[in-house]
Length: 327
Image (cartoon, rainbow, N blue to C red; front, side):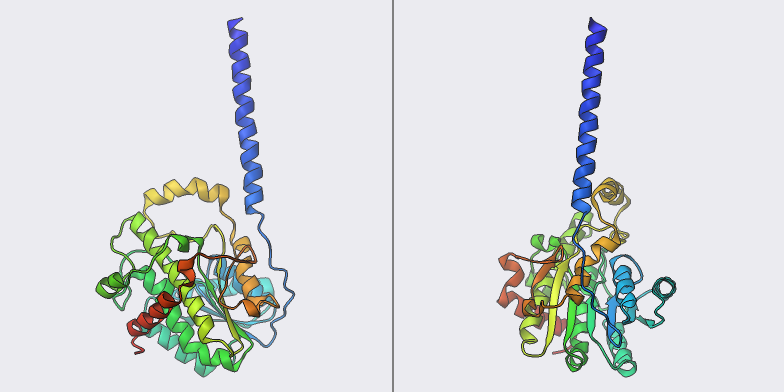
């Protein structure tokens, strides 16, 4: 009698575990089944820049835009990795108009050199995709926090330096990849003034906070940029790609990587799925009236008040100009 009861309990436990695993599998597949960009737009004769395009979402974005016939400028820091990615893209798409131009967003001089080279050698710019991002401690070559410098300040300067070319080639677009993490961000102008950074500390938690703050900067930058572009036929959008398996956490501690690995494996999308909202913002017809808006899952999303604060967005723009030596 006792052994039969034990057997029944084991079977019941096994059924519960099996049901839980099945439910987890169904939930995972539902979560990872994200909307796709359905635009049929062709880009022959158009030129696009994609920052950080040698891997992850950036590379997938470059592949899609190349397949549509665009001339794709791979704006990357690492020449060797970029050229390997270019070789892959050319083979996959049959488009030989894929070009490497060196860009280190952690160096304002590199950003200026890139813009100067681009403007001298290229006569069109139809889409600028500010895709690159990292979560790494330390300072940039200009002495600002690395996360703030790469994720916001480098892209800010790049966009401003290329605005006239975007206007000349309008209708054109600026697409900036941000994150839902912006909801946990804030802009501490006192910290920016004192430390040239969004927060202090180098722990994994401190780096995540800095990353969240930098993503709020992306949101506010897009909000302010849209106001400054009114009437120009240049539009801009920010977006969250969703939880995607990329190399953004490659500088994190081994403990953080070990703890996050199971979550990454189960619930994070591949780069192709993650690139869909970027492509939607770059290509979708009819979204011009939504310039300045935030997108996720290939649809416009509501944002909290901090992400569209006119006064903070204007001040961040002005502080960014100062940090870039523009005023």
